Length: 243
Image (cartoon, rainbow, N blue to C red; front, top):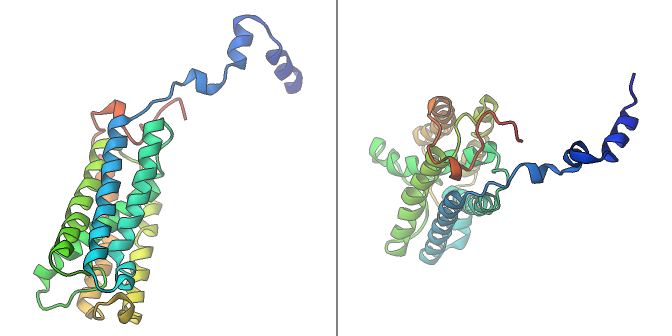
């Protein structure tokens, strides 16, 4: 039986093409794949989220209520992760984990759906803690950015610049934890969010939506085709010899 230590030493000190190949680092064999389009798009997404937060802060009389808002919290998290992902795409590093990117996508989509759909289903229901505080003017612009532009851009980023089949079934049970805990917080301490305590029907609708969105995202992710922009992907393909 050959000695691994001796084999390793002989490979290290070998001369010729075989020795040069053995001493070549992996980074020299696998060239760095930079994704400038993905980096630019995610940087714009981060800027839009930050601009919406600034406008929301200028329009609300209570910054504490803005900090306690679900929409503001998820927008800030998305802005930070998008900026970091843009850096990783520009430098050719591995993308952010689908567990994190998928969670943020479901959170911003949840806030947008509750803002745009829930009032039509329950017109008499008061605004919940998932709503974005703020008056008219800059507040309306902030809502347009955070509850329309940012969710749609995050959805486009996922569909057009991310390889499919990155989500896992275990993510479906993890992602709703934060919205459900936040809903419990809003029910227990409505004064902290600046919104009335949500009705039982609205609370159930929010909880059901928070649980269904990850299932829908998982189903779509399993059947959607791979993006055509291969040189600007944010996520790697499902099977690749280089990891």
